[in-house]
Length: 244
Ligand code: NAP
Image (cartoon, rainbow, N blue to C red; front, side, top):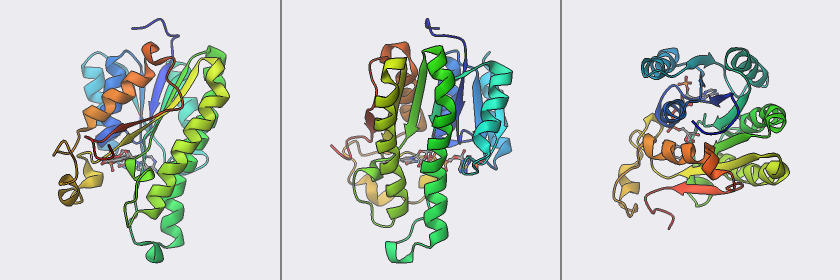
């Protein structure tokens, strides 16, 4: 445990994949964790059980982050249970791939709402208590697709590039308040989201393998520590050298 104030961590989209690994890593660091999910209650409860079984504290929190009402509900519950949310990881993400001429308005909006607008709303809700505590860590899970072309993902790429721009601006706004805001941009990571899409891309990965959720979670964990207090406004790429 560090010299940080008492409080909790909220990880969105933590019922499986990268979010589940982040929730467990933060719990190992002593944070009581809100394990948010949209549909997969069983997955979220399994993450909570693993954390509590290892002596940590966690709570499964249902909520669609794309719904503007969700931020207040998630924060209210977590604050009541575990105290102020001092770590926010905006991890929940979706994709709806198609070449640009075929992207329907609905699929454009769903991806932007979930991956970008939700992160803004949750960050907006998170900042005041963090500033009050003179301590806060926001980590946004972006993607290398926000930095380099991946045909068929214009909506997803735009959402992730927007997330990095959001990260940098908010970081500069709150840096003098003891709050850091960073992004982590994974490359190809083995999760349900990438089921069946990775084989061809792997040839281009210098490390010649996909990354694991734990390898992303470890970078996120670092950014939430006291040791990372002077790291803000960066986007840390975790991609086995793909964009090197
Ligand atoms: P995943 O296995 O598909 O898991 C997505 C998680 O997000 C699930 O827990 C899901 O919960 C939750 N979620 C989706 N929509 C939600 C919503 N509207 N509200 C609340 N929760 C929602 O994805 P992943 O691969 O772990 O990806 C996690 C993050 O990393 C995403 O932001 C993704 O864009 C990013 N990323 C992934 C890769 C990769 O290679 N896997 C690469 C770059 C970036 P429910 O099942 O309960 O709905």
